[in-house]
Image (cartoon, rainbow, N blue to C red; front, side):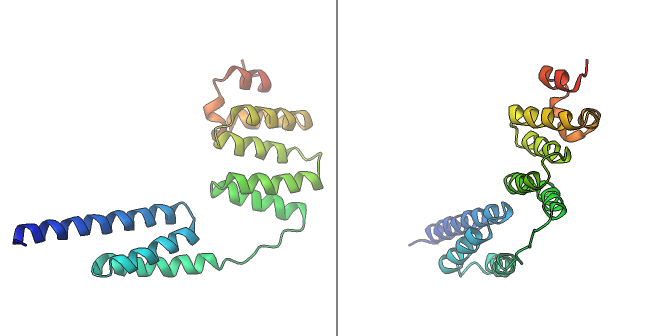
Length: 171
């Protein structure tokens, strides 16, 4: 094998290593620490000669392990579920926020801030019809949510929507 061929093989191996590491990082940044840990271990097994990337992989393996050991949060009261939902919305974990809001809504069905936050989560998910459905429910409980929705930047994508304007009486 010539020097040029050896360099090409080395370059191809490095590109494969980089691609594998990149895939692990994408998974890590999505918050799937279990899968990221698997990908990083596979990377470590297959590309141990890539010292710089191996150093990074070890750091991220440690982070994955610590994040997998998260404490289970005990939610018992309406306020627990409500605050947890806000945290999940801020983390952009809308599915988990909606589950928690559902439980809070079962505890206090006449609490308008629950359907309002559900509308917010659905809006962030791009589910306009469900967003408007829950926004309508919130405003049936308290008209104040109409004013809030008209000024809440999370609803900005809907501000020019005819249905949104009709529901919030914005003309």
